[in-house]
View 1: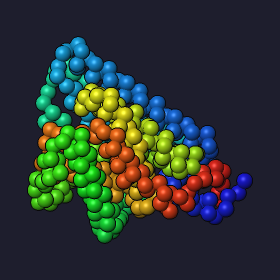
View 2: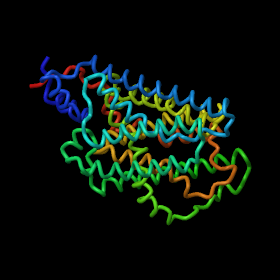
View 3: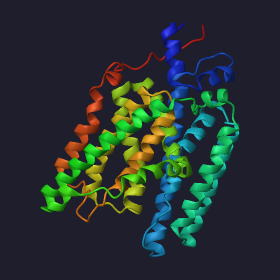
View 4: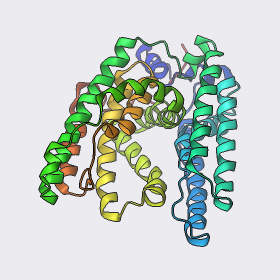
Amino acid sequence: MVSSPDQILLSNQYFPWYTEFIELEGGNIMTDKKEKSMIQYFLLFMFSFEILFIFLGILYNQVFHLKKFSEGYILMLLPTMSTLFAKQRASSQNESNKFFKFYKICFAGMTIYTVISVVIPSSAVISQILMIAESLCSIYFLQSIGENTLANIGLSYNVSFKEVLKYALLYIAIFILMVRVEFVCDYLKTGDVAQLKVPLADVKQLVGFVPLFIITFIVFLGEEYGWGYFMFPLLEKEYGVYKAIFFLGTIEVLFHLPIDYMITKLPITFFIGRSVMLISHTIFMCWIYKRTSTIWIAVVIHFLNNNLLGLWKLTENSFTFSTPLAVICYVVIFGSFIFSKTLKNQRKPVAKEFSVL
């Protein structure tokens, strides 16, 4: 079947590495079977590694009776590593550029360090130093790759500062709203009037976010490249945008299980609320994936999500996320993007047959 020009355009829009498959397959289009294989290989690699991580955590807590298994950075690198594994297994395509070679070395090194840390516990400072070194070295390797190659692998940083700032400010505004709503929920639960007046620590800290992003971006890229660049387009093409969002949100909930239970030690009641909120946040992130021209904006937003809360002087009653009202408010704020035109206009799966004209 010969595809329409619109279908060819969609294939390139959703799969920036699509032309690589054409070259590898001698002009044959990537089949549905290959797309499903890539999804399966991605999930196989990611959850197999998570099982290993859970096993290490059990050793750390139950066998060696140590307080907390804190080496969680390796998991943030996992989605991109799962992407590289899936692409290689499903299409015999091995990424040969310098950055991905370095990324694989980083992942292997962090894996070895994580295993060693179970037997020889070390300070979390060491893993932070490794993360900083990996981020700074990654900048060098990304700079050494030509713009065409970066575009082909979905890492082009040819994006205007105005676009990045627009979505960053949008997220900051939404985050501030969400935080203030949560403080009200905390007050209603605890009766602590101080929750209605939780002050900012120091707005000047925002200036420090730029250098902080530079020395930590590798872990946020590690997640977003796997979620937004790889899995979401595949799931959307296979199932349509709404099912893709739900499936991706569910995958991310399962992905965060080891972090929730072995690192942050969340009780089951918090986990239920967090799971609903995570799926709601996935709706917003999928909106970002489809609205923006590069995965780097999603990386910036992920960074903001993990660091903005530090701008407030929280108390022991702050940010419990333990009330149904707090969960509902979070769902309303982030989940409302499901009704946006950006997602509403993509209800049906993209046509599954493509061919070269």
